Length: 85
Figure 1 (tube, rainbow, N blue to C red):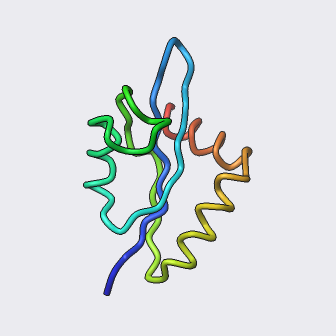
Figure 2: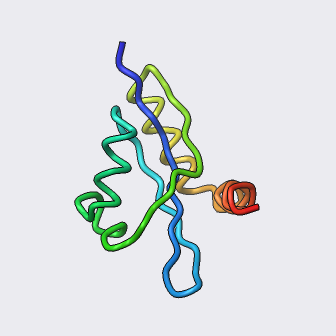
């Protein structure tokens, strides 16, 4: 059975902390793509660290969770704070 992961990665550029949220069926490979500048355009040129991940057996549920997390700024800030402390 395929697992779909919703994830949040964190990186720093010029004293600012940035986050990126996505979903994938191969989390390790996806993080490697982000770190090798072959992932999403936004993540090119940075070093990214996995701060959050959750898996689903349904691609649709993973996509819905990704959308919800992208639109919930307070939850993203909370995840960042927990990860950075």
